[in-house]
Length: 313
Image (tube, rainbow, N blue to C red; front, side, top):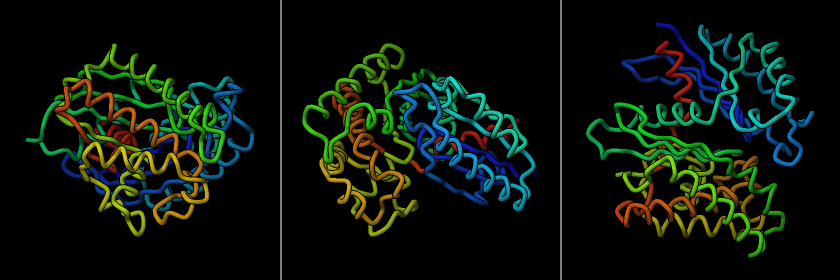
């Protein structure tokens, strides 16, 4: 059995999963996340900032040491939205190759969507409702994937994410009504594009993944600390989710920072993540005629999909 490692480098965070393949699934050996904000300023400048690159390279060096120490023999490094958008992405590619000895893959939005679905679907019950709509709410982009155990039926990646919308619109603390309206208009326009490719109304269940969604769920549950075991698999009705999203969006930065489950690297962008998630739930509920009025949260996402792809190759 070959121990594998997957690395997901997104707009806001870089994450590592070292795992042992086990009966078509994964047994975690190490799971880590660092907020490096690789996408800092990319939406405005089209370039990866030097300081963002250095933060990311430092995390990659740490991960390289862990991969060696834990004996992972096969490694896949995947980079997503921020790197796709950057004109100087070759600097990033060269720096990662030098530190990890693997070629970083700057994947398309469609492949990102497929990996997100594979990770989320790996822990769904075989006899559960189908099809499933998986929404991976990231820093620079959000992926919408409709599928079942047989695989992906339809997918679309759109350029809305918690970092991108924060930098583009939500400058005030807390955001003004005008800023919120402008951000919501961006989300609604993106959801119009999604519906051209993904029949949202066909979904039997909505599953949300990634840090914004898990943090919103922690807030809705009023956890005393971030607890993945409590968060994973939690299903909440739409009203509860909307209330949690609105509270996070309307808080000041200091109020969000004081929450016991809030990662410091999410403090300034969770409001935008909450705005996006609230809008997504509203659209899915409308598309399904009220049949899907809430969401389930999964701690398993694109990172698991990356590691699974290594194990199955």
